[in-house]
Image (cartoon, rainbow, N blue to C red; front, side, top):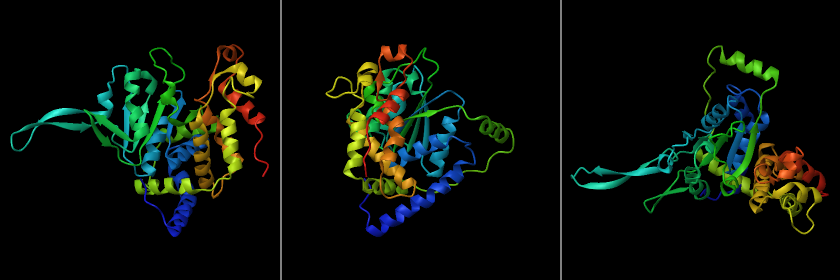
Length: 336
């Protein structure tokens, strides 16, 4: 846990975040073209201490983006390629029999790749549920249990998992309990023509300049503490809760289109992440207060993987994005 900050340290950290946002964009622009919304959502999750699910077709620089962000913050990065034959011990680590200097034998734990600051779980839906579940304890408790012994993970700790929405054969959809642990579901789409031209020109010319590390893990922990101190009015919190609650079918006062299209809505964690993400977004925008616009801006990445549409919605071509848009249109925001 991060230590308590004095008022002077807190103000210095707020100013560091304000100035750092521009520097972060400058460093990432050395290798990343466009994708501003994606970068912003990943940074918000990083500053808020949340995990991200990144959905996009192959070849859209998802791995490069995650690796670049880890370099900017000088964090230990590990990539785990999820495959059907991957076992839980391949992620968390395993015990081996070793011989000590005195000639005695003992069991020793060999840490797996999960022991890093930033974990890229590449194509997480290609491995069976048993292996997917190996991440649950790490994501929620920031620890790994092996042979009854708990091993804490180094802070800060983030899981950024990717999945390919195109190929469904040979994949294992993530269980809802695990999906709910991800703060955002970030969608990575194809670039506009000008940006794609810039990517091709850069990647077929001289190698880009190396990314400069701007922050440390200790800085990130300090940012987490400051983000949680950002003030937010009760009306804004209530608005976030109402948006999340309005997605649940079969409740008293549920909107007609929700009952018609949704089979399962968002839980309480959605409201928590809306508010926490809004606090981080405010700081990254140079503000020290949260507005309803911050909640609306994050509603889609927070709710995208928490709302399940039914067969009727699919038959009518109704997507989760449309449902979230209707929710924002239907739920009035704070008047202040």
